Length: 180
Image (tube, rainbow, N blue to C red; front, side):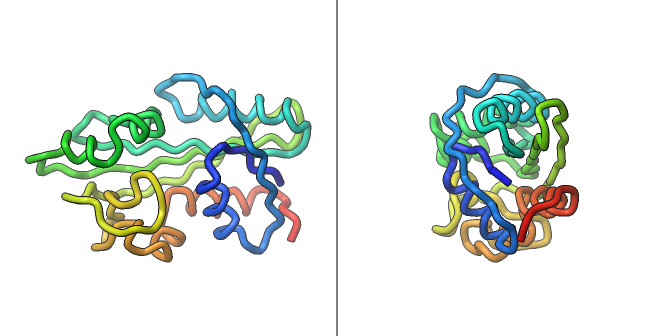
């Protein structure tokens, strides 16, 4: 199975989570559409990836949805990370008591040129008061999953067993015939 992504960190994380399966990286430098729907973004992206490789392929799109910020940055998480980073998010959250947030991931996959299928993974948590940890990438140093005290960046093992991406990849592995 081919994972089409321009984010090598996502590919490496998927490869670690799906370590018993054959997974190939397709460098996918694609201009993503702007939408408030993870499903719409993933649907259009996976169709473009399939046209490129003409083989079974999947893409993944993730958003960090912060309750106090009405779901922001949501589907714009990658763009926001590049523009204001974790420091900007923490600035927006100064003095805020409700720090609850959800990481939401959609995997869209195509086994043939006609059908797009989806799996979803979520992880509920909170935004920390400051960045903590050096592992992971993007929002990992400010996201604490429910029931835990460490950010994903403080414990990659924690991330790889609780994260939104882990949940989506686990469901994905149950639905498709990956070769071991």
